Image 1 (cartoon, rainbow, N blue to C red):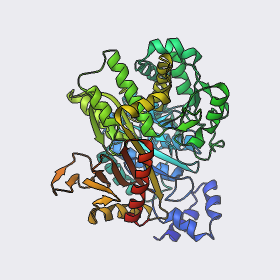
Image 2: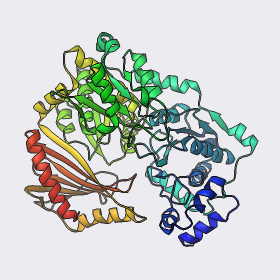
Image 3: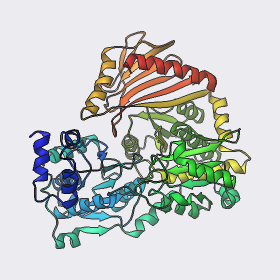
Image 4: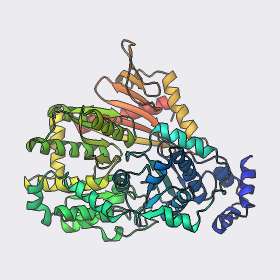
Length: 573
C-alpha cells in the first residue's frame, strides 16, 4: 500500500486509540505530514529506534513500541524457556510518554510469557545496563532519546552483557519486527499474565550500583580535605540524573550545589532550548549559580544521564564549555595520574576511545605505558572490548570515552555512565583544589606537555524520508573520488571503514584496519591531524570530525578554518 492507503487504514481501524484518531484526523488535509508519518517505517538499527513522538509508522508511539517489543519477544522465545524466565529489565527517562512506552513494552513481554522487570521511576542508562548484569536478564530496554530535542523519544535494546545489543542479534530482532505488518494487532496481556510476569526491579539493585561506584574513587584524602566545602554546581537538566548523581556525591562526601529549577522532572525541558549539556547555553543557569557562589566548575547530565557536559572558569574569569574531547583527556590524565601515584596502574592497562575522538589520547597513554585501542562510534564497541578482556585476560580495562561526552570507568556498566563520570569530575575538582590548582589550569598544562590539539565536529542536517540514504550517498562518493589534500594539508592515508581497509596515499599499500564495518571515511593527514566523515546513527545529520594538531590555539584555529573550507568544497556544501 502507498502512504495514503496506510494512513486511511489506520484511521478507519476501530482498534486505534482516541488520542491517535484525533491526531490523525487533524492532519487529513496535510499531505506532506501524512507522507512523513506513513511513507516509511521507523528504522530499528544497532542503536534501536529514535524518532519524533506522534502517530504513524515512521513515528514514536505505542504502536511502534509494541511492534518493536513483539519482535524482541519473538527473538527471546526462540532462545528457549530459560531466556523467557530470565526476562528483560525496562527503564525510562523523563521524556514525553517515556513511562507509557515502558509500560506497554512490559505488557507485550508479559503477553508473550516473558518476565519484565520495570523500574518504578526514571532511571538512567548506566543503571539499566547495571541491572541487566545484576539480575542476569536476557535483555534490557531503555526508553529515551538521549540528548535530542523534546519532540523526540527512542527505544534502545541491551544484550545480556549489559551493552547495547550486538549487530548480529539486532539483525535477527529486525527480521522478526519486519514480519509484523499489523501495527495495531499486538495482543494485550491478561490480568493473570500481568500479575505473573511484570515485576518491580528490587531496591537492592540501586544499592549495589552505588556500592560499585564507591569502589572506583581515586582521591579519598583530597575528598576528605575539600569535599564538604567544595564549590561545585551540578544540573540534571530535568533528567534522570538528579537522584543518582546527588546520591553518589553524598555517599563519597562531596558537596555540590544543584540548580533548583532544573532538578524537577520536566517533559518539556522548559528551561533550555535543547537538553544537551555539551552546549554552554544548556548550562547557563548553572553558570549563573556558579558565578553567584564563586564556583569554578559546572557540570550537567542529559535526560538519560549517559552524557556529561562540563564548563570551567578560564584565566579571564569567564566560563568556557569544554568539549567532550577536552573532558575526556582531563579524566584520562586524572585517572592515569592517580592510579600511578597509588601504584595501582595495571601492567596491562588499556584505554578505549572511538576513532573520531581526540588524537591527544595517544600521547597521554604512551606517557603512562598504557595501550590505546580505537573502535567505531557507539559505546557498545567499547563494551565488547571489556567483555573480550574479561574472557582472555589480555588487558585490564581502565577507561573508555567518546567525543560525544560519553565516559566509563569501571566495568559495572557497558554503556556511557554520566553518574560515575560526575563522581570522577567532582573528585577531580577536589584533587586539584587540594594541590592549589583549577581544572582549567590542568588542561593548559596538558596542552603545554603534549602539544595543542583542537577538536571539533560539524553536523549537516538532512531532511525528508530519504535522509539516511542521501547521507550515505555523500559518504560513498568520497570513496570513489579520492582526496589527496585539504588545502595545504596533505592526506597521508585513507581509512574506508565500510571495507575495513586503510590505503597509504604515497605508496598505494592497502592494509586491514581490524574494525567492525561502518560507513565512514577517515583521512589521516601528514601533520598528525585527521578529518572524518560519517552519517549519524541516531538522527538525520552528516557528521564531520576535525582533530587539528598545532603548536598553539591560534594556529590550530587558522588551520581548522582552511580544512573546513576545503571539506565544504569537496562535499559541495
